Length: 274
Image (cartoon, rainbow, N blue to C red; front, side, top):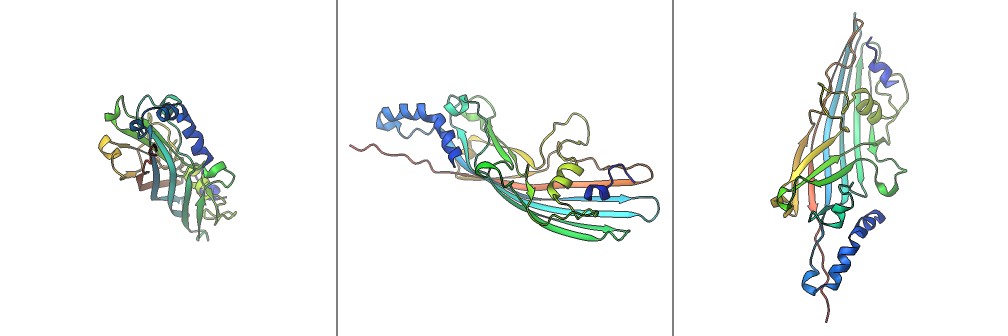
């Protein structure tokens, strides 16, 4: 059996704080002529990241011993308030932005089916969710934004993490079989696969599982809704060998694809009476 046998592996106050960064600029705008009151120091988006993926393992030892695990998962992460500075001199940019989108919402589900030659057939399924103790519903994934160069014409880069720190909120079970896992996301995707830190070759950057990077061009930033397709990056792909040795073989596959939807909030201005 391999050293890492899969049998063993189975055993919105925050938004107000961000807006306070603009207090000096907004105060200045308030004292300026009415024609300047429409100045918008940032764009605000709701960003949703949805997708699905799969994972499989095949383990065989000398003789009849065989074990196959097939798992699938899907997710939806939503960041209701993601701020993008409109100018490189905005207070948000100067304060150390990029920053994480605030007030995340998230959900997902998973399923695992195990087939073995030693009375190991079983299946399990359940839900994924954010850690219950996180303040303001955040903590699971994140969205980071930054400009791709100097000047508004360079566009904006978004780096997203969908399910980091998610928990198995239902379906968990403790037992000797691979499908009897108390935390599917932690035990299989984050730990056993090594997704994001056990690479297919040297020189790749470590990344969290289910992370993506997309760029919105200046023309796209003017639109109300933009959707981008994303898929697993080379840095997140896992080696096919998951622990072969001592007469046993272990092979694995892991992949995912999804989409990121950007919905721009309307900027409301107040006209000056009198």
